Image (tube, rainbow, N blue to C red; front, side, top):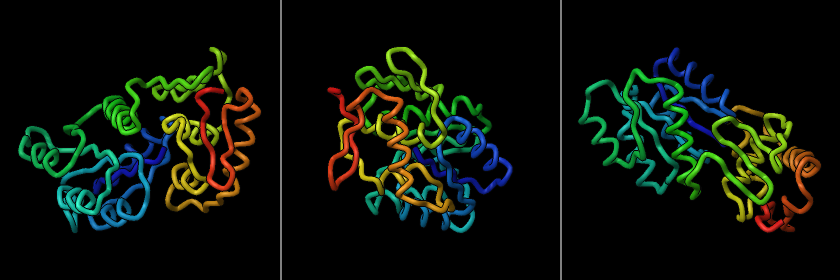
Length: 220
């Protein structure tokens, strides 16, 4: 799952990136409104953490432009303490949630998890597909209660499939959601991760749909 962090305070941005990455997400960062608008308009993000006070283009304007262009990714806005009008403006512009500075990283991560799972139609942080369980809170997966040992990219692939279980996910889509913007992407490596996951999962759980991609099979 891929997150965009938009924050002009370099130190806070670095803290956000570190905290979100440590919870099993891929993170891109933008420090200005214009960069954020371009990245959110051209890259597929599973969620965005968006500061309101930004140089070049404020966060509310960025959000309005995204929504006007049909970009539907969940957005968590960051606002200053007691600026209730910013919260209202953010929600009216299309934000899904807000968090007031200063905040605890644990709360931000919990709100991100909630936004991502709601966007994919899940009610719990624990996603289940047959014998497979993935706990988005702990970034752990298990089969019939036995923990799986996964690399970071194997977990990212599995997490994306679990959030979209029953849907056909193309190799290109997986590539876009498991690598950051500045990473040298090679879609062929997705096949490697799928092959590794199949060795660790029950047979038939990950189905290949010829010419289209992969699907997590709920009935396997």
